Image (cartoon, rainbow, N blue to C red; front, top):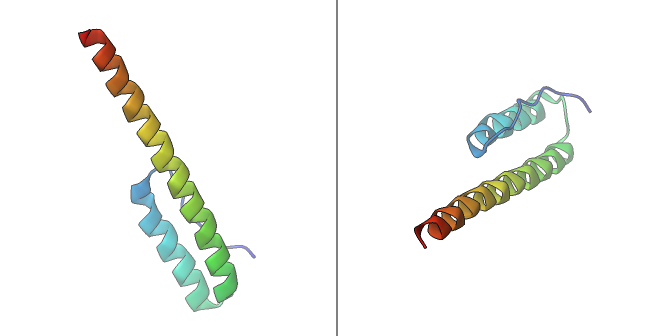
Length: 69
């Protein structure tokens, strides 16, 4: 299976990736099952991005709080 998937660097890029997956399925480039599997990978990447962003924000808040003490 090969098709062009746009880069995903933040959550805003997910819509483009899902559009590419849907288009690939519609064109017959990949099967619906393959599309579903790729969508799972995209979902896992989104969760990783969100967790990383949460950690970055939490660290910044903790540092700001420590500076206020």
